[in-house]
Amino acid sequence: MKICQIIYTYPPYVAGGADIYAERISKELSERGNEIIVITTKPYDGISSLKSSFEMENGIKVYRFYPMNIYSWIYSAKKSLFQKMLWNALDIWNLHPYLVIKNILKKEKPDVVHIHTPVWISLSVFDAVKSLKIPVIFTVHDYLLMCRRTLLLHANGEVCDHPKSVCKWYQGLSRKMVGNKPDIVLAPSKFILDMLTANGFFQKSKLITLPLGIELKEGKAEKSYETIDVLYAGSLIGHKGVDVLIRAFKNLKQENIRLHILGRGADQDVLEKLAEGDERIIFHGFVEAKELRHFYQKANITVVPSVCFDNSPLVIYESFMNGTPVIGSRIGGIPELIEEGCNGFLFETGNIVELGNILQKLIETPSELKRLEKGAFESREKYDMKVHIEKLEKIYKGLMGI
Image 1 (cartoon, rainbow, N blue to C red):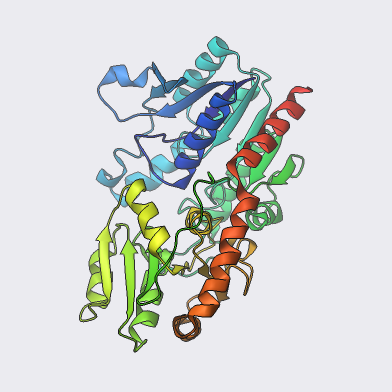
Image 2 (tube, rainbow, N blue to C red):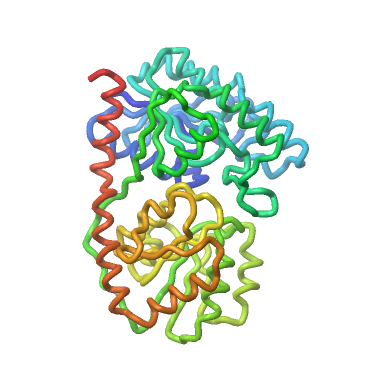
C-alpha cells in the first residue's frame, strides 16, 4: 500500500505525542513493506521555504513546507493577543497549504491519506485530499476542532463545560469546514469521540476507538523498594496538575520516598518554588528517550494528575511497558487505561487528599506495589505496536476495498 501521513510537526520538530505516534507508525508501516509519504511543516527560512522540500528519511519520503499561516508554531510567541486571535481565524481555511498538499498528493497518488493534527496546518487539508477523491482517515489527538486552546479549558484553568459565544462560533465553523469529509475517524479514547459527536462532529463518518501502540521490548525490570520512587513525566504547565501532585507528596512524612519530575514548561519556576524546602522532590528537566526509559524502569509509581480532558496519555502506555503502575486523575480518557486495583488507581481530579492517601497506602505496602507492577506489565500486551499496526493496515485496506 502507498500511505500518506499528514502531520503538523514531525521529528526532529516535535510539538507533542501526536508527532511521536505518527513517526512510530510510519516507521512500522514502512518496515512491513508499505510505501510511506509524510507531509509536514518546517521553520520559515525565506520565501523558498513556502515551497515543499523533499528528502528520504529512514526509507520514508518526507515533504516539508512552511505553511503561509501568520500564526504558526515557529512565530506564534511573537504576536500580540489580538494578532493571534485575528490570524487564528483567518488560518482556519488557508489556500496555501491546500495548494501545496494537493500538488504533492497529485504527484504521489497515495492509496489512502491518514491525517493527524490538521488544524495547525489548516482545515483546508481535508478539502485538498477529498478534491482528489482519495480515501481519508483522521486520527483525533486533541480537542482543537472544538477549542483553540486545545484542552477545553477556560483561561483561568477551569474545565470548560459551557463554551463562550466565540467558542460556539468557532465550533460551528470547524464543523462546517470538516463536515463528514473523513471516511473514518480514529481516536485512542472513546471519551474524545463521544465528546466530538455530542457536539455535532462526524455524524456520518465511521468512528473507531483504537488505543495507541507501544513497542514491547525486553522483560520487566527489577525494582527496588528501599526507596520508593514516584515519577511525573510531562509538560510543566497548569493543566497537567503537577501542583496537585507536589502538594500531595509534600504531605507525606516518609523519608525513603522521592518524587522525580521530568519535563519543562511555562510553570517550572512556580512549581520549583512550590516544592522548595523538600529535598525529596527532584526536578530533572527535559530528558531524552533513552534516559526516560531508565526512569520508567526505576519508578515504583507514575502519577498522571491532569486537570484537563486528557485524551490518552502516552506516559501511561510507557509506564505499563516498563511494569510501572499508574495513579491517574478520573478525567478524560485516563480511566479507559487504568484498571483500579489491577494496574493502578484513579483519584478525583484535583483532590490532593485522595491522591495523598493512595500514595501513602502504596508506599507503606510494597507487596501491593509488586502486585500492581505485575498487572501493569500484563496490561502492555493489549497495546502491542505490532497488533496496532495490523489493525491500522486492516482499516486502510477496508477503505481501499481490498
